[in-house]
Amino acid sequence: MSAFKDKVIVITGASSGIGKALADKALTHKAKVAVCARSLDKLEVMFGTIDQVFRYRADVSEEEDCRKFIEAVLAKWGRIDVLINNAGISMRALFEDTDLKVIRELMDINFWGAVYCTKYALPSIRQNKGIIIGVSSIAGYRGLPGRTGYSASKFAMQGFLEALRTELLHTGTHVMWVSPGFTASNIRNVARSNDGSVQKETPLDEEKLMTAEECADIILEAAEKRKRSVVMTGQGKLTVWMNKLLPGFLDKLVYKHFLKEPGSPLERYESNRR
Image 1 (cartoon, rainbow, N blue to C red):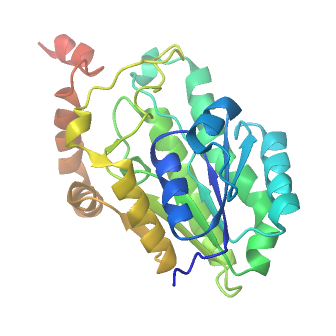
Image 2 (image 1 turned 180 degrees about the vertical axis):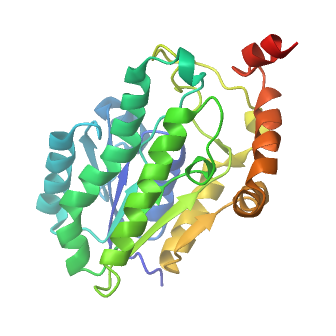
């Protein structure tokens, strides 16, 4: 029997990608699932009229939306057992070209969205000795060029969750984060450009990436085992290890890696070197 049977699992950013896959997988575990996204219409299309799914329109960058979402879940089912802070956006631009509103938007969604939802869900999760999860990234361990705001938001999320985990160490509440590698999802297609506009394309070959469904399976298995954190790919694990032992060398490798991506923002710096 699944550990999540009849548990209430709350997932932010569930209208596509990893969030949608997490909701689908949680349903196979016979869980009750509460999902939110900025578009209620998209949630209705994705989940229809499934009784075990509670759909709610919320922008996680707005504290009041998060409070109302969590309160609505509690009014619906009376408890929260698992909170998965999944909502997030990315960016691709050199910092010196980036409007600061882009950095602020990423922090508001990726970091503050997790803080807001966690704040209001925590009393119920503590009472039920539940689990708080942050969907992070390798960018939370290693700053990535062209993604300064994204890296900052994921570093902040991991620091927040690590501190919270330590505070809650003896309460029976578990706190963890997971770091997918490059995953086939919508996050890069809606990544912000330097002016905050949507890029509408990805520099990666989506067919070669981990699927959102595979990622969701790993997350739920890790949650069931109450792991501290999960880095999902070999490349990610190597990056974390090298960043601790050979940070200067890794600076050069990471620079070269992101210089090779199609349309790399780093190309402008390269032209100045020639």
